[in-house]
Length: 305
Image (cartoon, rainbow, N blue to C red; front, side, top):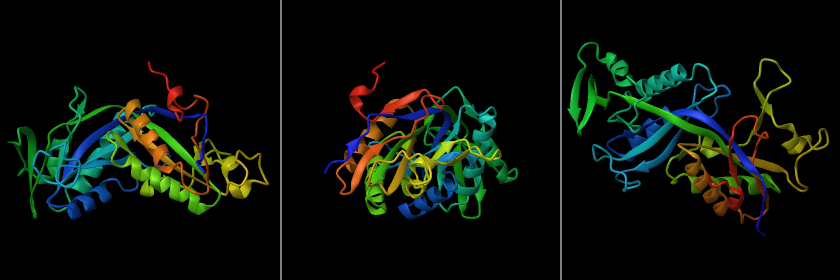
């Protein structure tokens, strides 16, 4: 039986993001770089940014995207909410820490900027100070880069790291008759999103089992469990759960723009809606209080302008 697709929308909000390409000599070392660079970046509730892998490109990946050095590569995005007052400083610091500590340190890795914008950070120069006066400016692959001598050989990265406006908070909720059904649906949805261009999922395996709401009864916390959708609180609160739902899993989608998130959302719905035991696919929103970008689950409801 096909799950009900709730007549609702996910409420996305504006972000600032950077996007860069990591390459390495093979998939093994590329994956090590990616895991380190995107680690501890599920949610800006407490993390410095939200980070994820867009997709693999070049050899072994999306071959329509060539890497500058012809090696296996993957695209990474880092997002911070635009409503943060110190968003520029925080985004630059997140990128600096993750590139210098997790890409530079990874054997055979290199790093390339992917946003060609008038707005950029002089990030390459800051990372290059690690060279302790032995670093130098070079031109390679038709790009202006920094060269840093390291024990393993060399590390090269672009001089500039551009940033642009993006979106955070696209999401889908999977209501299952049990944990297995909810998780299987979310897994299929996440797998469908992985190859989609321009989007990232930041939670473990792309899935969050602890969907939150803004605010808390504790003054020191900005978010808390969404109690009306917790199955084990059904008898203690005014529940928002349909009958016979015992588990809710969520995927969160950040991306370059609305169109990218809309396409990923529909791919996720199409891949997961027929899972046995899945009762409904819905999404979280706050009536426009968090963001003004609505991604409707029913595509015919999506505004065209």
